Length: 543
Image 1 (tube, rainbow, N blue to C red):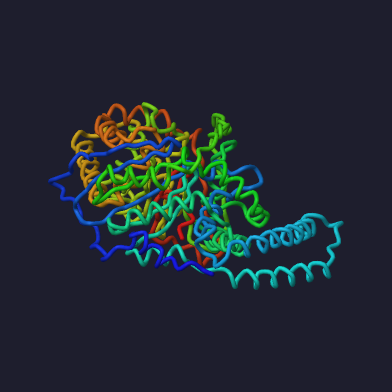
Image 2: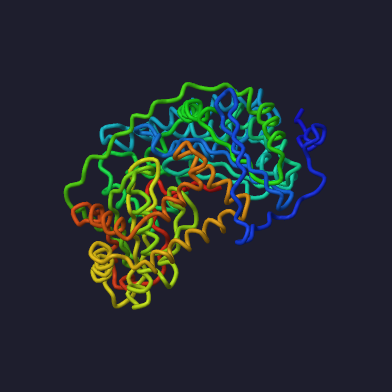
């Protein structure tokens, strides 16, 4: 008989008596230094705890240090697909009887594997003659088995449990480097979060696997295959990277998505979703010692796993400009990239500062959280491109745990051509290489960096995400402040030096979206942030 989870949570004393108000913001005058309490369990899971008595709420985020770069060959998109499967319940959540459901899922695996092999061979070999009768039998048996399983499935039970607890913003995202799970709750529901999330890590069940795999494929169709900017980004990324897995899309290539197996996803889960590969950020109206007690009680029993040794290909040097063209019935657009080093390199702060000069300070910290198209009216791209009616352009010099790209995205406005807009962008880069940036302009950017840090520290969620980012990328949560100090220490001479060294013609990759008809030839304003590999702004898979 199905367990009534609302009743169980009440018995455990985990359902709140009220729903708290939304988190308040910290004023610019306060901007206090965070009191971060770090605690690592015996199994290696790290907790970053920040008590904030602004409102009786808490942001509870978990990040696994795994993303698209870890997808095995032939299994691109598996990290993203796993993120989807983590919302499908556990041995107790999402089912009326896992014992009855398990043999049905195993049967579905066998049937789908046979069907998958037939369809793959039919698609890839002209000499293979598929047995259409057998295909029909398999599809009929799959439909019948799914019908039996459907009777046992409790849809969206995790979402409903969090809703009853007063939770908001239950979601997740996968980037090239990380997978992050987020929720905001009333503070008195924190034990429920610990119970539910530990259960997800310890006892996941990847039910409805094949239908969810189809959902992911549809996500790719909507976000890439039918979208000009998606096609441009994918073509650009594949051209900009020769060896590093950043060249592969996080969502995966279509054929890989269709041929991923449930046991492959489970094997990937066991490898990377270990507590010693995870970081939790708990920010809000909490007592650190109570959070530690809950962490030990619920997450502590989950066993650690051997940490996988990543042997990712090292990107070889680039010795000449790379250019590609994507033709689509859409407005023209440009995407550019220059190789830059990883976070922690001495030149990384100056390169990020260059992006700030061109199009404004990013909305987050460490590794780039993206910015809008062109930034404020004081930025160089705004004054040289937007204000003159040439179009819009946006730059991002933030990097990540691996060497990355200094990214520029631009859209021309009629009658400006992509070639003319490209030259206007190069003119601004040349200015940086030949003219020292005035100290007044440098100071303006430094002030914007301070202001952005205050804004990002004004919410539990903003603090939690930043802490996870710095800890995951550098292994040092104090980089939260170090990053700001490094940026503010950048000089005009540093700007000129890195612009000359990194932003050179022989190192750039340029992708141009060219209209296939006159209807799409007119440039339109509107350019999102540069979507670069490793940039958390590029994270996909949000539910």
